[in-house]
Image (cartoon, each protein chain N blue to C red):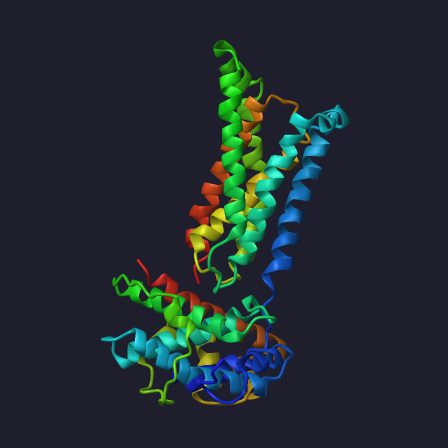
Length: 183
Length: 211
């Protein structure tokens, strides 16, 4: 298997992540992102960059929330591409555009030059705004302001355990918001 | 939110999502055990169980639904993974269903015309039909909840596989309580009840198993 997205093996990184290695998980998601971005942009000709980035983010979120559905005995890439494909088909459907994306297209590894995240995500910011107040505040504090858990917990009156649960639930809600947009 | 910000959020969330397989199996078994306990205390297992199990035709009341339910359960588990293509379990279950239908047709042909409907009807047709659906309700709901944590490539098919698994296992369970042993009876009503539960699973799965 070729090694787009760094010399490390994705499967090894995910296995390490599953044992609680946060640095490995961060590395994995960072390596995956440009590859996923390349795949999405190549399959979504004619859609603008922001739209594609939303799909990339939805894919990352799904990879995160559904990582228990990866079988550690199998390579991670086909699993990750299957999720990207699912999210892309879903995003097209929301646009009212029926698509046929051959699975085989997602089986090959697509080399893509690492591209920067184009813009501040307006759409994603709107989504965060639709979360319950405390979820939104927590996400803004942790991600946008980049503060540590202790400080955000203190500000929102959450003990460390409660903050963990709150963050996990908030991410799950964020993933569901997209689905609810469908007619 | 920039993608890098999202990544840093994801890395901070260290809640490990539970694996689907053990939870689905235990949810279904637990729900079935609960209903079985209720049935035992309300109705009681059929008195002539040993004799019924010894009869090769009557034994099919357990073997046929098991041959549908177990492969369907394997299929539902496989379909909780996003990269799954195709499902041998469902193919096998379809063959079993086809064989059961063929048996029903042959059994109808072998029965004198005037006797077909009375034998199909037995004396508890509606009760059997609704009982299997009732027995299925709790395990189906529990199973859908657990499968929602999966990532099905085809939510409707996943729901159908779950419905087929649950409906068939419910029929297997109900066979311990049902004394109607004519193939015309059980092929018809068990089959119909399982089909309805499969359909219910498909419809529910379409909405509940999206991700």
